Length: 437
Ligand code: UDX
Image (cartoon, rainbow, N blue to C red; front, top):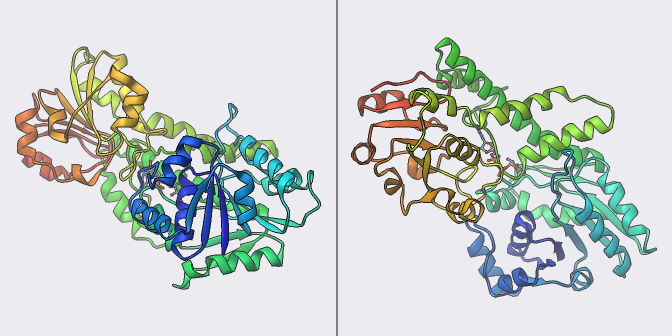
């Protein structure tokens, strides 16, 4: 099928590339000329596992092309995906200026029937607004479909190629038939394509992400309570997660969720409920609890050093908001760095992928190490903010040699208490008892 993808951010790029992978002819459109030029030369603008291989293969095969011309994209695609940014407005709602701006332009240049697909995460009622923005400028027939993405960073290619479900929000048989034809190759396993109305599809995305953010936040509060009463959140988690109604996943406590989706989506759902006169109280709590969770380890650091952090050197492992990405949006590491610097500490960080992004943001406010062990040389403590696999089985001997004292603050509960205790470390984690060397 012939596809256009408008917007080559994270979602657009993965969508375009993975649609090309099953034989569709895809043109991706972006207004950023230098980015388009780079992509035309085979350069992938983001780090996402496996994307580079698919990208190269499909460009070579002529199935994946890039342009700055919306008209060329629209002339080509019978299905046109809108994968545009919906940044957070000052009041927490999703800003639709990019989505509606492009919809407006589409109305001016559309010449034959198109299915316009909202792939961006948008508030309930956006499909109606997109429809109005297009039809204002044209009489040509078109349909607007809501088709939310459920791509996890780090697993986006796999999530796209083997989705657990596809949600299609539309009331047009013609559009639904085309969308089902497009997605059929991805759900051969029998996973469902769930067809519903536009508004329910739009809400599904917000509901799913807000529920997951709530699940994590609930566990973070259980962890905080465990610390008060001397329980072990790891045990509680295992005890809970074996109940199939609860499930084992997304129960891992830590220093809060971050990224481009959960923080924005929870706030946007709260705001959109408020606009409809509904006080979605639990979401307000989730936002606030998560905010304080990001620095939950800080009081422990402060206590350990008797409030005197001035000149202390902290080695920090993990800057990305989660492993397998270079994304630092809303990353807990940044909030911890802020606190540490405010209290006069020095930070030397290591992250396998995200250091360039942090360098651009913080300049020389912190220093960066070539590898995880170099960061710990002569440091007063090690602080872990992201659970990259490489951090899971360190050489404790090397750490002991490098650190001034064997001292770890772990925001992701990477190590067994028994193991670190045997290795002779002082170890603070989340929702578990402190180990003193
Ligand atoms: C999320 C959704 O999972 C995806 O479906 C959606 O469309 C985009 O948003 P992503 O932001 O890439 O994906 O990350 P995800 O793997 O879901 O993790 C989100 C955050 O929750 C991370 O900060 C992670 O560290 C945190 N998390 C996750 C926990 O703190 N504990 C857990 O048990 C799971």
